[in-house]
Amino acid sequence: MKKPITNFIEKYFLHFNAAALVDAAKGYEEQLNKGSKMLVSLAGAMSTAELGKIFAEMIRKDKVQIISCTGANLEEDIMNLVAHSHYKRVPNYRDLTPQDEWNLLEKGLNRVTDTCIPEEEAFRRIQEHIVKIWKDAEAKGERYLPHEYMYKLLLSGVLEQYYEIDLKNSWMYAAAEKNLPIVCPGWEDSTMGNIFASYVLKGELKASTMKSGIEYMTFLADWYTENSTNGIGFFQIGGGIAGDFPICVVPMLYQDMERTDTPFWSYFCQISDSTTSYGSYSGAVPNEKITWGKLDIDTPKFIIESDATIVAPLIFAYLLEM
Figure 1 (cartoon, rainbow, N blue to C red):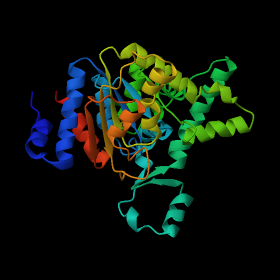
Figure 2 (tube, rainbow, N blue to C red; figure 1 turned 90 degrees about the horizontal axis):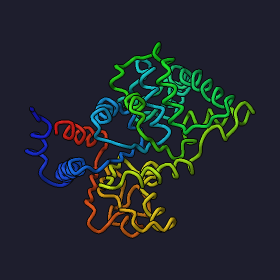
Figure 3 (cartoon, rainbow, N blue to C red; figure 1 turned 135 degrees about the vertical axis):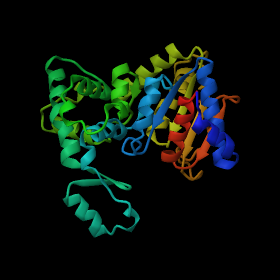
Figure 4 (cartoon, rainbow, N blue to C red; figure 1 turned 135 degrees about the horizontal axis):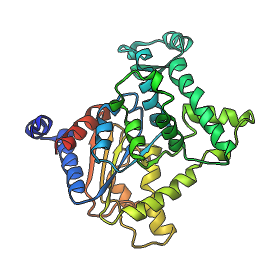
């Protein structure tokens, strides 16, 4: 098997963050080879950055066993699937004035760095169908987690009429096909979360129709307990709640549940562009997590201080060449 990415990074990525990238990729490979499972957390706007083009293949090839992501990443992969041709790239985004930004708003274009998401074609196109699924569940007295509703939406086929990219490039569809476990903490902080809240405020839906973050944590606790025999690694893209929420399941089980046989995370890697200072979780170095009972002294730990849109595809490409 030809391994052009592997050969390239092993030849040229020899020092500093480049070397950390190679070490982290090899550590991830070692985890999979010894039968460990891997959690990947997605922060930021990785779905809008079209990480799905390679992350979907990681899912199909069983290189990731559970995902933690923000509500934005959950929905934005689907938005890209159904509205890609309506997105607008703004390569000169650093030069935009407040008036330029207002003009984008008036056109229904919500900017994420150099990419504008079209409100009508993306948000409203999904809203029309997801609201029906929410209401149908409530009418039946059923409750689901946020990602489970999204899986129902994708697998129902109602969005097929809108597809604008190759389906193989949607990581959410790949995950839905496998019914891959997802943890989506703070889902309310997303467009679909805001829309759901608006229907609750209007009295058209009950808040209880959507399962909560506490239920995500208890689900994760059970999943971790059942799957940690050979270790579970933690590959964190960015910081924030997508990373901090799931990593806390270990000290919760060990300290609060007093299950002192709970193993620590068996591998940890974070791709971060945050400054290591001032108490931010995103900027915390891996060793700090030892003091919180998340990582062991001997847990393989890596931090790559760089842009995740560059680093993550290279590591994933390396793993897919295994």
